[in-house]
Image (cartoon, rainbow, N blue to C red; front, side, top):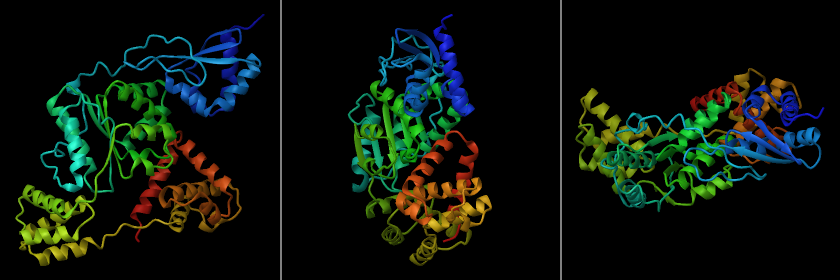
Amino acid sequence: MEKTHIQLWEECLKIFSDNLPQQQFDTWFRPVTSLSYEEGNLTLSVPTAFFVEQLEERYMRIIAPTLMRVYGAGVKLFYVYKPAPEAPVTQQSERPSAAVQPHPQSPFQAQAALDFESQLNPKYTFENYCGSVSNKIARSIGEAIATNPKCKTFNPLFVFGHTGVGKTHLIQAIGIRIKERNPQARVLYVSARLFESQYTAAAMAKPSRVNDFIAFYQSIDVLIIDDIQDLMHKPGTQSAFFHIFNHLHQNQRQIIMSSDCAPSEMKDMHERLLSRFKWGMTCELESPDFDLRREVLRQRASQDGLDIPSEVLEYIAANVTDSIRELEGIVVSLLAHATVLNREITIDLAQSVLNNAVKIQKKTVNFDMIAQKVSDYYNIDSDKLFTKSRKREISDARQMVMYLAKRHVKMPVTAIGTRLSRSHATVLHALKNIEERLSLEAALRVDIEKIEASLTASPV
């Protein structure tokens, strides 16, 4: 008796289940069903376009031979999936897809706009954002977006600059101004690290949670993502963000991002995402100039009720040049000395505070430090990392060293291999292996967080 298309697909699922970790099978294959198999054309139903991309990019090496084994040579694969709410006509994947089915209502659509938590810090307004030549262009563009959100000339807005130059304040000020003018607007501020954490949790839960995650973000009117560079080395999260970005941009929703580097300097970020980052306006927040530093000091002192003589303001502004956050920290220290110790604020006091501040230097993480911290964490002899031992605990720790050396020291792959007496290919394999495990293993993510914390906490 000839098997039905459902029975044939069940055979495929059995093969996938036998050859994949249970979590991966449950997430990416269990929700997929067979709609038909006619004249060598297999049509599968998948939840979303995101599923198509994941199957094509991550699992085609097992899908292709399995289909050939079950259906025979020449089988052609088609997909049917449901578009996200308000999305334009669903695009075809690399393999053809069949007709689009009606989509269900998003579970997030019922949420009233007034109940929507934007996660914006109310103190980050344009009114207390100090301006100068160093941030004039970025501020002007931000105010233009906030004043007229319907104008999409600057969509997306990509703001970059090193730590402490005011990126977070500026991008949140845009969101606050938009909410002031339109309280109904769904404005959301989120850090890239939180976005990645939410996606990972959704991917590890039942498959529908990934769909809910994407649908929720596609319902946003103004999406503000801070520290977008944290999505580097996160291919799965990047793919999810790609679909969200496309939907928002195609539906004239505003996207605002900040980063500590320009798009051209981002490594291990999908090219298709980088090209989209450049669609709108990219502008740099430069290091604060003298006038801006003095104004920040004056404003912060005024907010704290602190009277700082002009000569002290100028002395601090002339000597603290890199970061606005550092300037604000100096004011806090002066306030403590003035109130707790009942001292008059003078240049001598400012000099004393600055001398203490400059002793706190940013530690330089190096390869040897990483190797030692990883060894300590896993309670193994660090010398064994450099041997040819293939014991599981040694091999796993060695791969962790490779991953952290690439991430924190930015060492070339060949240099990492040389230090550990391993080939270029072995290091590449290790990096890929850690990245893939991170999306599936919560325990591994905890290990990395704890090791990274120990690197930060360790002395110079």
